[in-house]
Length: 353
Image 1: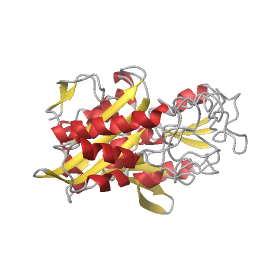
Image 2: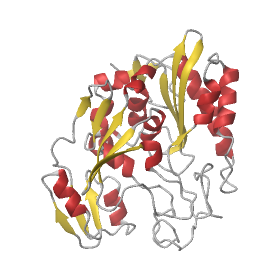
Image 3: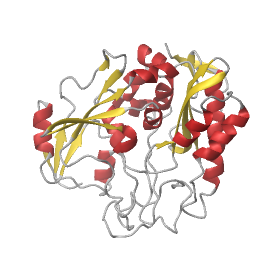
Image 4: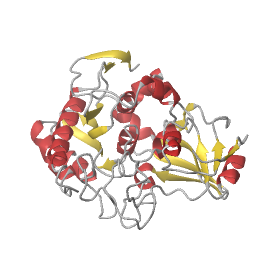
């Protein structure tokens, strides 16, 4: 690991000022950053420790009925907060499907948003990667592509975004709060991650020194709590990133779908909001025919980025149907014993509320 300077600011303003230094990186739990530093993938010259910043470790219900999740709220604390989990069950299920209990006890809200792709070529400094070195090329193209993107990819990058947490956040119109030297701004999470295009090194809309201070869910997100699920298919039942995942949320008006929300994970370099599928479902009966049509719409623009990942397109269609079916059946009173797993048919384990 390279030598680096270390600063622990006492306020957001101090953190932003320190973060503007060339080579600076923000440090919270470090569950991703420290691994990347040890492997020589990231070599910051200045770590800005934000773990002691006041007021960023709270879950606050807002006056308009929404909720604000501070940037330093731990994943485990958020998932096990009874009020939050009851109101946003798909988010809690996604959190509990990620990593291990030990990592969830450390990992933070903002850190989860900022984690880097798990593409094996990105993690290998000996392989060309446009994310690490713009213009170097993408070793994944023509390489081992089984877990790579089928939506929104380009010839310059075919990696995927690894977060579980961000998938239901995208479905529920989450907004990211950002602090900078010029003040504060808010960006929809669906706009926070640009697609790779010809500049995959640009992973978020953050300018140098900008700091995530929180994530907000609007009051409308609570209207889906009775019919919301997160489903994740992975190579191992636990401690593995998604091959494909889906967050599905429905608001039922009698025997019809009043409104639908759907987002996919593991298929693109950002959580993929399937708005075309949502439009298909509006006003329809919540049945398998409607869900299959929605799945086709969600993957209409998909194409394999390599010979090994064409299967992900059909897998994603099936996961969409399964997630919507589970959501239509109703949110279970308790999180399944294997959160987000298709092998968890009966609800048991940690309580939603």
